Amino acid sequence: MNKIEALLTNHIPKPKRALRSNFTKIIVTELNAHPEAAGNYTKLSRLRSRLLTRAGMLSLTAGTLLVGGTAMAIAVWPTPSVSKTTTQELPSGNHIVGYNLKNCNYFSGVADTSRKTNENVYYEIRQGSALTDHQLESTLQGICEENVSNNAISTIIKQLPNGLPRGGFSTEALTVEATSKDSITVSLDPHYNQSLFTIKPHLTYTKLSGSLLVYNEATKMAFANLRPGDTVKMVMQSSAGISSETSQNYNPQNHPEAITILAIVKVPALTNDPTTFYTGVATDFVRLDTCTTSPTGFCRAYDFVDNNTANAPGTAPPASPAHSHKP
Image (cartoon, rainbow, N blue to C red; front, side):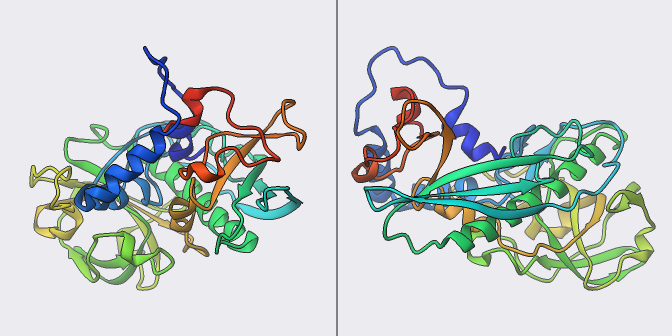
């Protein structure tokens, strides 16, 4: 399951006092009143395609620090697929749409990356949203593709001589533009919404670890066999020692002179933009769980940030006030 939804639904602290019904609205108002904070939140937290993977820790600069998984690289490279299963109109004007996810590991952890999965997910899309059912299906495909490659990175990190070192992080999907015997030039995969990322294009990295790990999906390969046009994800270490958690949005990937590449995984290129999911979650759509307390058979796993739709008829609100007001 994507951690942005886990942040919305799981590990909910018990409040010492009742939560205000307009909690979410207050937070959104504060972000609007302080655009610099909202900008940091958007770029560094909410809109990253791989914000927090299922067993990972967040790198607020360039990607996700993935530490789960087994000691071996992913045994089989699953091919994920997404297909629409159902739609249901609601009296509010919103509608429910369901999708079947194969080999996506949407709700699963990273420990068994070769296990085939078959999962069903449901969303409520708000009336008037510009996001179509097909667009949601497409971005879910991108999410699933990211899950597979993230799992591979997670397991390969376990093979590093000392694990993930201080200053270590993993990257988004990058397109190889050029290679030499000791350098690689890359740009962000064009399927991402480029405006949501701070990484510069055409970056050349020249420091390769002496124990560099290179994989072509599940199989080890030589660095020399990488070619322009390949898509890769990398594990890097920055020696800059500069925090990314500042208003300057420091991105260590933009400073190749301080980067050492520890591992490279050649992955299938994205076919869809996963970031569309993160720009729409809790604004254009919310995820639903099956339940017995709603006439539709579905309850919201979390709520829309706009209170105008919080109690729209047709689906029951989240089960507890704490669920209703998680950011």
